[in-house]
Length: 147
Image (cartoon, rainbow, N blue to C red; front, top):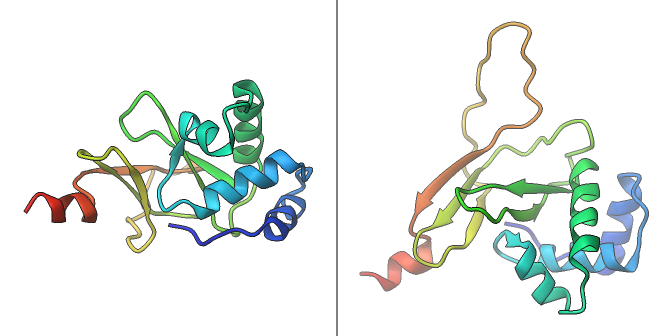
């Protein structure tokens, strides 16, 4: 999904997108950058520390999504997941086009960057800002364990 994000990289990325670099935001980007799967708010709170304020987390997730640093994944669950965007995304357009895969067994949501789905062709006058495609089944780890 993503590669590890160092604190200095997080600060640079925040500044690059015109977002104030705070210790909380740098820690949030680092946690997301080190994860191999998209993370829910509950998982983020656990990884950032139980004293993390839910409202602060929610507001920062919204700000970082609006800036084009994160994307939200609604993979058929009531709890959305969050993952880092590639550096090409910005506040006006999310330029990553990949499949989100949700595992039926472990519940993890993966960004499958190796598969780029075809971009939808819409009637004249429509302009796509973002497009999401979700697949469901068994991830590599769970399919191996169910043989």
